[in-house]
Amino acid sequence: MTSSDARPSADQLATVWDPATRVGEMLRGKRGLVVGIANCDSIAFGCAAKLRAFGADLAVTYLNEKAEKYVRPLAESLGTAIIAPLDVEQPGQLEAVFKRITTEWGKLDFVVHSIAYAPRADLHGRVVDCSLAGFQQAMAVSCHSFIRMAHLAEPLMTEGGALIAMTYYGADKVVNNYNMMGPVKAALEASTRYMAAELGDKGIRVYAVSPGPLKTRAASGIAAFDELIEAAVMRAPAGRLVDIAEVGRVVAFLVSGAASGMTGDTIYVDAGLHIVA
Image (cartoon, rainbow, N blue to C red; front, side):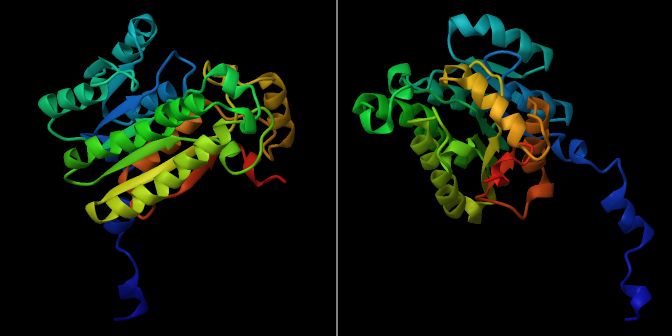
C-alpha cells in the first residue's frame, strides 16, 4: 500500500467532517430520562433542551404537585413523550417511572441525574457536626438515587447507553460553605467510576459532569452563594460563569456515539475554574 492509498477517500472525509454529520444526527432515535428540572434555570432543563434539539426523545420528571406547574410547561415545550412525578424518597415512585418507560418505549439510551438535597441545618454547619439522619438523607437523594437509576436502566440498555450525574468541584477540593455536600458529591463521583467498571462490558458508559457554580434554585441553599459566584468569575481562566446550554451541549456529546471511547470520567464544564490553585 502506498502513502496515497492510505489516505481517506473524499467520501470517508465527508463522513467524518461534514457538518451534517454532527451530534444532532447521532441523537435522532435515542430515548432518555432527565431527572431534576425545577424551572427554566435548572441545569437539567439546559440538558433536556439541548438533547431534544439534537434529536433525542425525552422522559422528564417533576418532584411533586407543586413543582409540576413549573416543569410540565417546559417539558411540553420540548415535545416530551413521558412526563411523570418522581420523588426518590417516596417508595415506588422511581420504579413506577421505569415501569412506564418499559411499557411505552421498551428501551432506554441515557439517563441524566441532576438532583441533590441536604437538610439546611446540616448543609450550613460543619461536616464534623452534621447529623446522621441529615447525612443519610443527603446521600440517599444525591448519590444512591443515581445508583438505583443505573440498576433500573441496565436491563433497558440492551444496545448500550450513557448514565450521567451532576457533581461539583467541592467533591475534590474544599469549597467554603459547601460543607457536607463535598463528601456526598465525592461519593457520587466514586460511584460513577465503579459503575463504569461494572457496566462497561455492556456498552453502558457512566460519567459525572461538573459544572461551575450556576445560579440555580438548588444552589441558592448554599450559604454566601453570591460570594462564591463572584470568586468563580474572578478565578476562572475564562473570566466568567458557564451557562446551562453549555452544560447541555457537553451532555449531548457524552450521550452521542462521539464519546464512545470515554467512561468513568468526571468532566468539568466550569470555564477552567477547576485548574486554578
